[in-house]
Image (cartoon, rainbow, N blue to C red):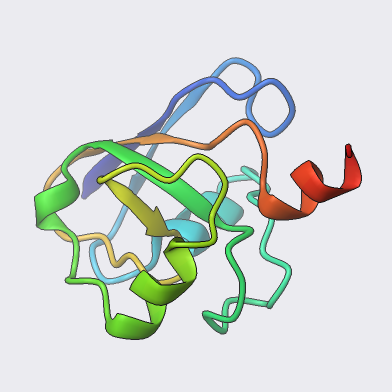
Length: 112
């Protein structure tokens, strides 16, 4: 089992949470199955950036991002070198530490 630690996020996971999952599933599916409601406006079809996360530990253990994901990430709010779309990042056997950004592109545009 792989441990995924979600760092505290004021709305999605206020106290943070560590879960254990089997390798082979996406970070998003793992989160959703444990009650961590990461936004995913395109229903996991790699068509938006609302499920953007930053992988603080274990980034290199994830599958490589495909070109479509990389193109979308360029539009994500708060993009960092360890950013991934959680619907596309597949968990392997290395423990992960995940930060859910404060905003998604949807929330940023709504607050203007």
